[in-house]
Length: 211
Figure 1 (tube, rainbow, N blue to C red):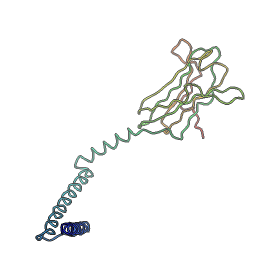
Figure 2 (cartoon, helix red, strand yellow; figure 1 turned 90 degrees about the horizontal axis):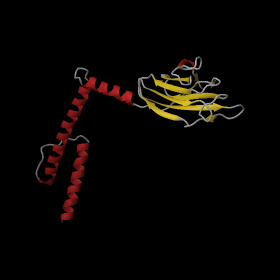
Figure 3 (cartoon, rainbow, N blue to C red; figure 1 turned 60 degrees about the horizontal axis):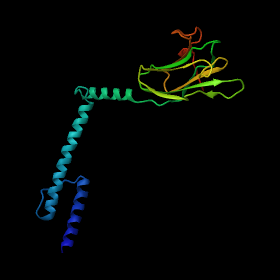
Figure 4 (cartoon, rainbow, N blue to C red; figure 1 turned 180 degrees about the horizontal axis):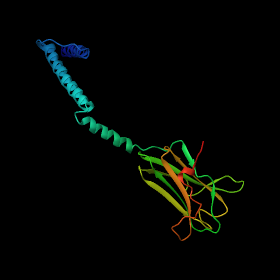
């Protein structure tokens, strides 16, 4: 008998739930189990209607330019777009081949600035070329770093015997980025000086876009 009553209650609850889902509004509940179930789902309907009204009011406030919330949301969206980190893309820039002035034991420096308004991830590789040999990726290998808007990054290495750079070879710096507003430069510094060797600087405008 108890099992039979449980089965009837389950059927009644399921049927009532289907009616609520279909949008049926119950009349005033009667007595017995079904009446209590009707009353329960009537309360559920009222709660869902109240929640729906709150959600609609919130959405209206966010999209209403006079509420102030729309401006706040726009500000949040702008900040999120600036913090979105761009991965290295298909834009590859080359310094072109350059050599080291004879009898120079200064340093070679490359630098990159992020002139875009979003965070950028860049990859930089330095290659050495010999005569009729495959190019060599110099240590420490490809450098990947993230630049905030308006930030810069650089790396400098000495020239000389048993150094990363030496005279008598050609070199190339390759930058991979996703923005044309990432600007690279390479220069050769004179030894024991804060001045670059005249004619050695390769500014951003002289870099070649590789296909």
